[in-house]
Image 1 (tube, helix red, strand yellow):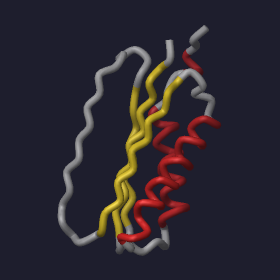
Image 2 (spheres, rainbow, N blue to C red; image 1 turned 90 degrees about the vertical axis):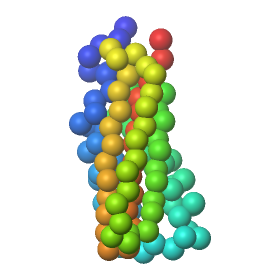
Image 3 (cartoon, rainbow, N blue to C red; image 1 turned 90 degrees about the horizontal axis):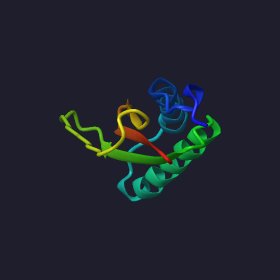
Length: 111
């Protein structure tokens, strides 16, 4: 049965994302040719870590965007159609002198 302890906890997910981004990107310089592999690696790492958190009944979707830090603004948005009682999301932003990284993680409950 579904229990409140099994629910997707946005605060827990955000903490996981933040820790991974800090660890993996702290000293990374933006190199366009390396970014596709880095985004895939980050996405897989975050998904694997979230599975370890015990959200077994959730399908995890992780979106990672990395761009060059040029002092310009960026706006991003995402919309989903889901069950407001069980599904949720979390996001975080990481920046250093060379790049920015935006991660959004969506947890969709399997019925």
